[in-house]
Structure formats: structure tokens, C-alpha cells
Amino acid sequence: MSKVLTWADWCHRFAARAPRPRMHSLTRLIGYSLLLLLVFLAATVGAQGWLRQQTQRLRAEAIEAKRAQFEAVLQVLARPVALWDDAYQRELGEMIGATVTLQTQDAPVPPRDSALLFFERDLGHGSTAPHIARVSFTAPPTARLLATYQQVTVGLLLFGAALLIAGAFF
Image (cartoon, rainbow, N blue to C red):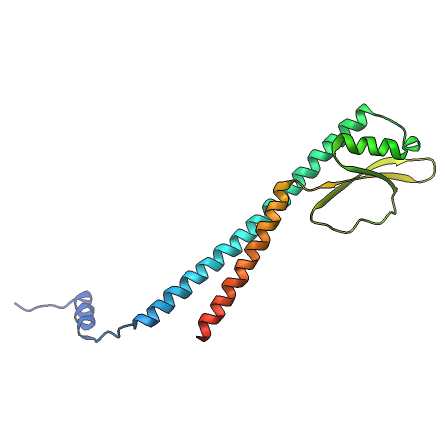
């Protein structure tokens, strides 16, 4: 009986005869190290994006909560814009835990501060110019914690990149 070789049998016999180059243990170790480092860097970049999204969501929720509180206080303590004095603005601010200032529409926007949030509410036209109430308040503690966590994550990302570069040269 003749033996018919199939393609799979032929490939198996050829692979069994061909010498296999063995990977050195040092090369394998460096390869695994680089693979783990790349996985670490990918996880760090993914976590950074997720943290940025959560921080923005937390800030938006905090602003909306203060806006709702401010609207409720304005309903209770209704007063025409022309009669808003410093004592009234301070009282409004104390009731919602913020700083309330009355400004005209062309007032400059305050400098960006990651620990300070603000929103504006149009109060309509006063006697001479349109007035805007600017309500500024500190970010919630969880937002500051997320910001610190983001800074640590960026530091780890840079450290991982430095390890990757150092591993490539040594």
C-alpha cells in the first residue's frame, strides 16, 4: 500500500526536520519587560482620558447644583437689580456658599483657576446697562482629589516613558 502524503503531513514533517532557532533568555526577558511596560503605558493613557472625562462631569454637576441653589435663593430673596448692594450680594453668597458679584456684560472673565468654578446669570437690564451676576465658588473636594490623581498619573506616564527609553538603550 502506498502512503499518500497530505499537505498537513508534509508541513508537519518539514517543520520537524527544520532546526528551530532558540530565543535567548535575556532577549525573552527584555521582550516581556517591554510588553509589560507598553501595557502599563496604555493603561495609564486610558486612565488619564477617563479621569479627564470624570473631572469635567464632576465640574459640570457642581456648577449645575450651585446654579439651582442660586435660582432658589433668588426666588426667595427677590430684589430688583438696581437695589443690589454689597450687603445683599454677601448675603446671597453666604446662603449658597459662594461669592456673588454684580457686573456689566463687558466685564472681563476671571483667570482660570482649577480650584475655582464660576457661572454667570443674566439679570436683565438695569437702569443703564445689562447686568450679570457672576457666582464663583471653590471646586468640591473630590474634584481637587481627581486633579491630584491626574497629576500623579501624568508623572507615572512620564516615568514609564523614561523606563522605556532607558530600556531601549541599555
